[in-house]
Length: 474
Picture 1: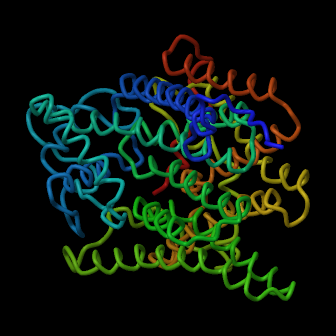
Picture 2: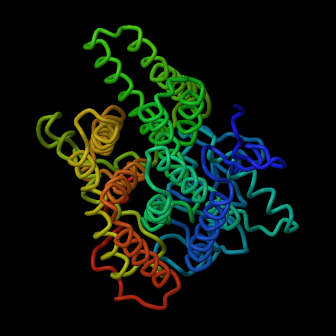
Picture 3: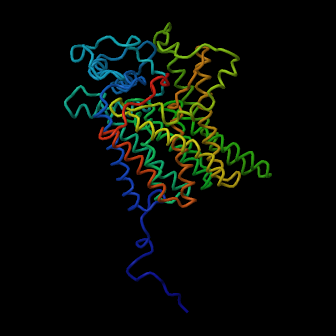
């Protein structure tokens, strides 16, 4: 007896099967991608147009780094900000100052901390990408002298990249696609993420860095893929944008280490050895970038250079350990409320939303641990996210202490921004498992409405009641 085929004679199984990319149906992924791109571009462009003045979070120095590297130069100790950037700086103003400096269009002027580019310690990946694209765009406009504005527009690409990779990572964590789409929308609704991607700042790469590390974590813990090439590449590229942006991928390495120990406890040494490989590759790639770049920059520039930002910290007031540990959970406390958009956009309505969002995201790692089986991949994600956000303050405190024998009273939560995709992932997993689709859509819709109304100035409850600049140290 012959078996009857269910496929029509003029169709092959491959022709009937839907086309996929990264495991996702291509048609649906294309629609999601277009939606995310439109959302990212809309939010960033409105912020760029309405917030003309430069961010007080070192944007002039970051802009100079991108400008210099796009012209074949790498800043070093004692490097001065380029004349062109100082001229644009004068025309934009800085912080709450919306009035152009008198030097606007008449020369470079004289600015804070001697107009030095003190951001040379950051690795060059973010600046190279942003600077080269901005210079290319500037060339198409016949050298309009708008390098900073064009560089800010490139932030839409960084934001879209973070959203797209986060969506793929959530799908790897078995989050149903509607929940994944709703969760990804939350990323630019965090004021810090939108602020960083609408200015020139290496924090703009934090979201895509954290999302890429999250994708690697899902690949290892859920799919049980222990290949080492992708983890090493992700570690090198994310650390190459900013050292702190590499912390999420280091958290992945720590997870693999604990998985290896668990395998040893079960007597499976072969499995333990295979599990260690991607973690070791991550650590090696991180070390090569961190120590390699530090050594490269250590021998360049003025030998007697003194950081103009020295003194931002506070003298030790008690025991060293007590002071350094005093801010252990500070990044959670101000997770979404201390890195703001321009004064024209920031207002009390945005403060209320950011505070509410911070509470929800801060609880997300604990929630996913509660609903997950102990030592499962969901439990591991929640624990790694909680510990990772907490450890950021320890790393920053140690850096300041090692350099200046000082400590930060309040470590800016922007340093932990690369872990925001992890917290969003925890929230998405909880919503997907509990089938809270309507709640998820309503929450994302509320945030979108608040952000768009705040950005366009159509609705605000007035200026923020707190001085949000007091936390922006460093």
